[in-house]
Image (cartoon, rainbow, N blue to C red):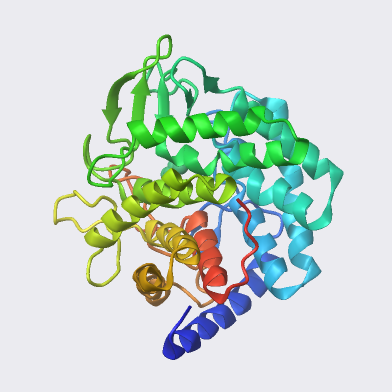
Length: 383
Ligand code: GLY
């Protein structure tokens, strides 16, 4: 897939990843990191007494550390990564006991941990955890609207009708559960949600909404929200990438051509809006100043673009691969490969209107690593 000079760059990045993860994994083996504090990973497995139910152990990103360990185990064959992944997976059992903190992000939490463990080792306890999570996700389906409810009630008020584009990365847990059990219900829900999302989230220009509110009693779109982006009707870049990669995931699971065409439309919009230097803003429609950026969006987009490249013809492939390489090279240049930080990717942004920007976020490291191994042709597909 790569030109010779890009191949040399790729090998260099893989070497840097291996060196960094060797010590970071030892240092952080009993944590579930989200971000860094003065360069050291925090630990989201520790409940914060003043946090909400969705913080602490229930925090939606708590599967990515385990996922990074499984990717490294696959790449290196080193058993320590498997053992560290299992430590975080076991900690997540507390979420099932607490229950109230869980919402639709159970896919992000249990695909890269329990489904990965079960696929690699056949561990029956991991299978049970993943099926438990899939059943919780299926239980969030709204029959009238044909969507999976995103969050529980938050400060925003009544969220019974809210669905968000990010859920496209949770529904692969449902495809997996049907494949595993032979019961089609999970997959039926995933397909219905993806079909609704194609109609309600994807705009004519190929961009996507972050949040769509449906009427929870009768179905139908009530309104849309800008969510983590700049404003309603704008174009939150990480949301674009959840759509791009997420529709590709549904295509991989179902082979439904509409999902591939939708992933390509979002990809074309994304590529057309990519700045020349490959550094992705938080929102494609944000004001020029301040120049807020989000490297996590670049990493997720690269994963989706490489997956598209795998299934299109030779004449189309270059477009997607070149864009993915540009994004990953831009992130590589701005990353921290030293011991000054436990994290690699340093320019993540949770939301345009968040109080802080440009900091480490664990899924930046996860998707950067996944994209790099995809380019090498050796990723463990966890979705
Ligand atoms: N899934 C929430 C986010 O991307 O921040």
